[in-house]
Image 1 (cartoon, one colour):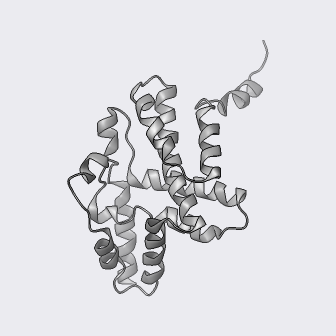
Image 2: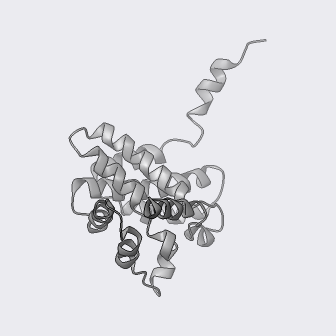
Length: 188
């Protein structure tokens, strides 16, 4: 149980690790844990659109895909041009002594390989989480997301990812809220 407690504290650390790309964007902030939640929720939605895929595997990949960053930190695109994180070693060290360590390692490796249908959807869910953040900032008036969105949209590989991105891009960030708010207003 001690090793499991260590893993739980390590995963919790993702609440404290900021996503570093927002520094270059000039606004916004998000922890790795917040990003992982958004990515995993998108994966849950994808499982509803693809009942034929392994939902547990897809959601597990999304939940775990950035777990090594508790050890390596979040390296953005500029950082990655100069610094190489040894994520396989971080994962190996992280799961050492855990009976279910091979399952964690396998899901992270499958996500990184990106070849299974679940991995392709998981990678798109990761990009869609960023697209949501960028679209949110764009909708409230920040201009840099307009430069960032085209390359991020170009990373999508699945038809589902592309369709969800198109819906996100054509929906204002608070469109969901207005019908509910207007329905509750009392006429004077």
